[in-house]
Length: 100
Image (cartoon, rainbow, N blue to C red; front, side, top):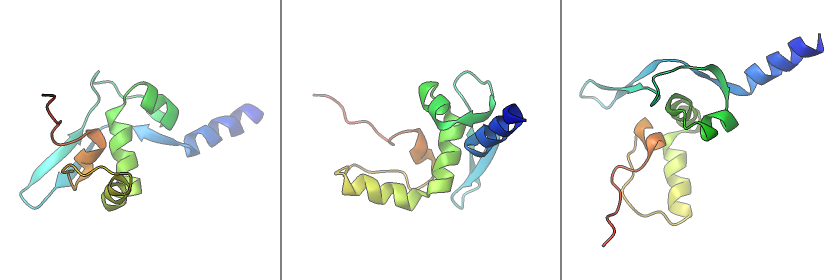
């Protein structure tokens, strides 16, 4: 019984790493969140997602948090570069500054 409740608890604290598609803007474009290795792991903890750079979980977490909230926090900590105001923000900056 303890093992069953432990697994149920882990599922509640995880995000499902499974294929997902989101609409982007009004022009009909979509974001098909995918992982670099093209593998899906099912219920995944945030720790595992960060350790293994699992894009799908990152995008789903960004959806839960909200893009506007993420941008507000980024501005508050001093990030002033342009940021995508959509779920692709979870995958990194739109452009990287060049090192001169």
